[in-house]
Image (tube, rainbow, N blue to C red; front, side, top):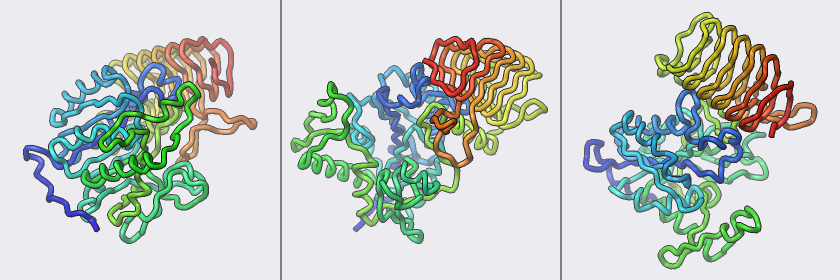
Length: 441
């Protein structure tokens, strides 16, 4: 039976009744985001002119009554210091803080470890967002469903192709009531094409007891949760004692908590028809950039470059960037701070990062040009478009799996008239000959 909820306190009260937690991960994760994550933590990577985590924070800030947002992860404290300062200026109504896990605790373990901070002020519910998700974040609709159904939990879901579904957490729901009947993380066979988007709304009085029960079950039936390496075998168990002597292990919402919540009658799914994708690999930043630029074109066109003969919208150009008027940009292009685009250059479906230079008559398609990298005159950097709705950024060429997006790391140089196609190039490399379908170490 559902527990009764206290009516929401007003936003102008002493404490807000809703909080938000953004899960930012840590440096031992994000290896798939290399070479970009070698120089910058993934949550701070710019997509559509703003850090990935900024898009999450903007969505949270639009929810009435949220006054506090907590970032949880295991990066060092200094990593988010500047972002928190900038956000305090931009969103003075939001108190943003970063809580660092002493080691990776998993998506549920981190919430449980910092439960006192989350429960401070007595919120009745809180949002949980994974920072590496790109979507329109319909948090207001989730909150409405939560209140209408007197829910204990609401999960954001979306439909994908049957082939792709088994790569995600799959949700079986009642189409009439929207109640979650069954949840399986990455099932071996097809059960549903409605998948977990990595955005949740939990009742505080339900989620923490659920995590605690999972910890107790683990203590009774201990098992290794990961096999990182023989040297780190001990790290697969956490020995910190909680109350009643439970062990604090890696606990994941997806594998350890959600399937149990589905046994309750008060777990619901909001199915979004809007865009959604994960930002896992470095290449996935390019389709995410396109999705966020398309959204900005509809909601905040003043942020984008004005359309013209040589600007095919949507295009974001940082105010400090230098773009020759004869260069043609777009669609779905982001140009970072102090970047330089030369005369007659063509840039399409790409991200050009800070201090990068694209010389005259060069062509950049479906690519990421790293910080302080240089593309020579008449040179070509080219990836391959992936189908709309595809959730992978790898393709098979000549029987070999390669990245569809070409990615030049930091401080790379490409000589004049050189072509680089479907390659990932690690930082500080000079490209003096044509290269195709390679990882350039």
